[in-house]
Length: 494
Ligand SMILES: Nc1ncnc2c1ncn2[C@@H]1O[C@H](COP(=O)(O)OP(=O)(O)OP(=O)(O)O)[C@@H](O)[C@H]1O
Ligand SMILES: [Mg+2]
Image (cartoon, rainbow, N blue to C red; front, side):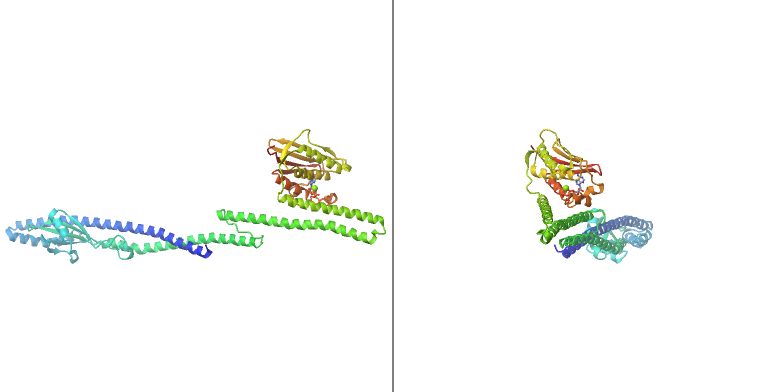
């Protein structure tokens, strides 16, 4: 997905999400309030209806009794009682604190004959009034309701609550009293919360969207940084470093990428250094050969001594070059871990051969050699390459041990591991050099190594062989008293 469209998409999702959450909460609140108000209005209606019907019944009785008291008879008494009733009812209703309701009396044939307010005369409710008359008990009805959500988008409409109560009139006829309640106060409460609620909901939604956008923008920015770093690496720039902020997942990713960049940088630096060192090492013998060739050309014909010396030197330098070339080649070959064979062979026999070879090469130093114990030590591996690696260590031991010193090659088996120790009583390696000696072209003491004529490649070749064999190499050394190289090789299924 395109980056900007991802942003748009995330924006839409956050708006939708915030809308759903905030809208849901606001709607629920509104429904609860609106429902509560409806219940309050209904309760108020029932309370007023109870009081009003009580008052109406009492007034009818009182009016009737008064007409009897005055000694009236028949139709006259009924007419007087009715008049009296109609006169006292309004005062009694208003006196009893029933001003919240509106009232209307209907006669038996549902003609209105008294009402407190014109709006109490609600049309279309005759069937409820009939029902109240017939069953002689109160009947409730509601008109003009707007539904529970009506107040969300306009003025609230809880409707008009009516209770139809059958009443015994003083003229011995039945009538119906309509107690009508207009829930204006309750509607006003709903109307009053609508605006603050909408404002609150919109602000909450806005804050939610802003917060989600900010955090997502932050994440996208980190992802952008990562992409930029990847582009920079792609363009060969290895000095970039991602900002690492915090301990979260993206911080961890940035740290891993920084580590990766660091490794790539170190590898590329090592490669550059290797090429520079290799060409420098090659340049030295080449310069020597050219110099002696010039001497040969100038004086070689006349002076046989100079000629012999020059030829010897050229021979020496070309040997050195050949050795360097072969070392470089074996390094490259080892690096690709090509041709590591796995055959069964006797390591002790090979070690004895290595020591014998070294003893001949370093015969003039008068070193004391100690070889592996009698008997065989069989393992699976590449005999030639392992011999190369051990030879390098033995060669170093001989090279860096002064005349009369001691070099020993000890082998043993510990469960599935074969241990080879090359111990010498030589000059040792300074502690600060120990971590570096396996690096290519590294020589612990340049001047000392110069006279031994090495390139500083031996140990790195040995290490790459041991790595290919799946083993480990480790060094311990005390400056001035000797060095021990320990190889640990897997024995394999012999
Ligand atoms: N047994 C040892 N005693 C003392 N120093 C050692 C020993 N083995 C290695 N070193 C130090 O470690 C350095 C690296 O050894 P390495 O075999 O890689 O190179 P080199 O012997 O100098 O040259 P090359 O082996 O390429 O001819 C040496 O220059 C030397 O300073
Ligand atoms: Mg060496």
